[in-house]
Length: 480
Image (tube, rainbow, N blue to C red; front, side, top):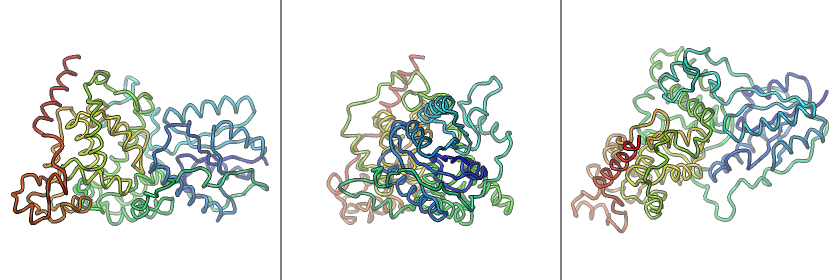
């Protein structure tokens, strides 16, 4: 029988992988393939490249245990698949369907080539719970508000049970030429800055499933009330990078949560709230599918002429380095730099600070997150930044400006999170931790803090910054 090629992309797993299962069920030899095509979509940021390398390494190890291996190639994906079919005689290609513009363009080109060459292409779902094309308003239009979107999703047929991973994988008699994983050049060269990432995460399917199981038993109860607390590590699943690279499927998460809720009625509220967060990821892909210019253009056209301060590189750099003088903002940005991840509530705080307190374009923040987050997702990253900036779908009103002091006092009341990532403030009393500039001189001296020297003074006057932001928003309203 002719060989079946299974193309791995954002589905780096064996369980609940419909494309892989379908290929195995043909009874033909299966050739697992990963192609690094930098033009397939937006080139990955540095942190995501680190994650991808280690995720591929672990997937390759799993396949080798089954007597197979990943065939690594790089360059144009369609041309590489054309070459592989010629080298192996493969007549079928199995893949998981994607929704960002680059992947969809690739799939269109692949289908055109395959039709001319008598190669069958089989596409399968699995990247989202509810395919964007299956959800629409009564008028047949895409949703731009989350709550009615999610209600419509819940009215759909519930996701089925996840597929078991194949127990056997018939490999081709001879394997085609392949690159070594190291030749994909995914890891940093020169200075190795990944120590904090290594300490914080273990990429791969095994770690993803273990993390999901652990969260069901130790983190789901109380999720709704505790999820906004960055000082409470167990209150977040930290599954986002695993989900981003498809090491765990959204359907597997859905079923684990539903089973936990069925087994323990006390989890009903928390489980519903957690699934709602998975729904936000689906909603982001719904938006990206229907509005493919989302990564570049504001969903609300009036914001195209928003008076951003595009030359304030000093403020942007201070924000990136966690040196703004606002402790909760600095803690978040340093957590991001050290670990490649940031708590979701803090993501909203630091994003609001950049676009509203500093009036710096949301695309600057989105680009920084894209480079430094291990879970940088082409849909969620853009949609979330536009939401905070007030120019996206279901957006937070522009006049809703997070107060970083109040946010810190509310969600990090004991200062545990700030002290972890801003050690200069470790000895500050709780009363002044989130606004050290208000502390008397003797308190600062006792804490060993010299504002403007060991820790920066605030880079912006919040009262003036808020007035400036509201004035800019007023200009947008006047253009409507």
